Length: 79
Image (cartoon, rainbow, N blue to C red; front, side, top):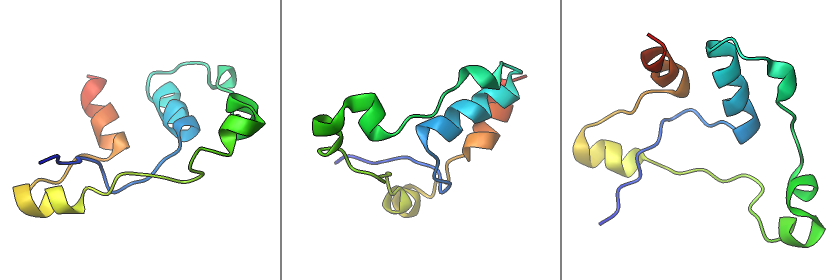
């Protein structure tokens, strides 16, 4: 079967990019948030889910594994 491994914390692509920028001292002003409509266009945006995420609770219970949060993972990457 397929196991989804995802942290409990939910984040948008925009917030994820900001977290990376802060952690590595990148210029956050270069990150621009857009709505789905601005990014995909009106027709394609209507086909996209507005708020979706993976639920990794089954994987965590089956494997006894708790994934790192985004912040914890970024801390491990930046040594």
